[in-house]
Image 1 (tube, one colour):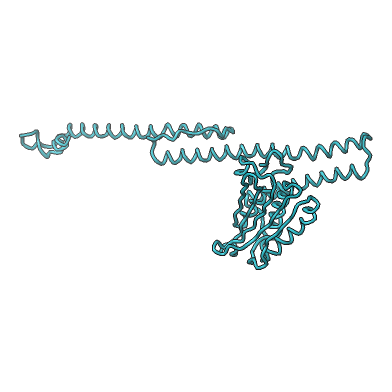
Image 2 (cartoon, rainbow, N blue to C red):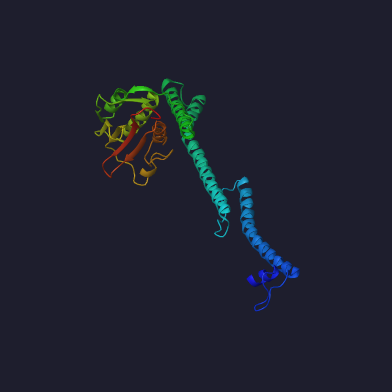
Length: 324
């Protein structure tokens, strides 16, 4: 090949011969050969790009039609930008499929939770209209109680939706957190006594002041205490502890009960919405709301439930001001 190039441009002749002049036909042949090789390589490269792009276009059309299970093959021999594009599409399709699955699950769960109180209200009203039940205080109170259940469920769903979308407005103010915790616990004192449950606290009076939304943090504590009281049997105990952990720069609060605990298969998902054990009587939204509210404050939350030792739900809030 080098000899051909040299001969074409008059650098030297055949081996052992004298230099030759400029050979136009030979130059044309060499150009044609290199042009052919270039076009062949370009065609191969374009082929590697065209097939993945055709697959991607077909997959996009399927997603547009509502099929979120479609994926494209990330071919190893495709150029790197094409592989990145295909990988990005597959990631997007995974998220769309997951969101669609969660949407359907949410609709099913909401329908299930709404059905019970609505059935009670409808059944009692029909019985009153048909003359089976009198429109007395007992039956009307039952209806009113179920409307309260519906109202709480709707409020919980709204709070959950706002917190998950990141649009929940927090009205932060400097809060004496030990006073807030003590007030919430005292609000459950009578209910605990009626249930035969001992309610203990260990909350120091020198907790750091926190920049939090006191209404939302009361909601977190009320959810944790309501759960603990619901699952603690008569004669059991609930202990609420709080303390400052200076090295981590957080205030930690824990609510521990002596109930039956959380099943091992449920524990990893206990903060997911509508997740609850088979014997649960709640909506399955309380812990999901608590988690989102704590995270919105820049904190952390967790649960532990050793077999036979009840359940502890804890959360931590940063002691510094937001953004510090």
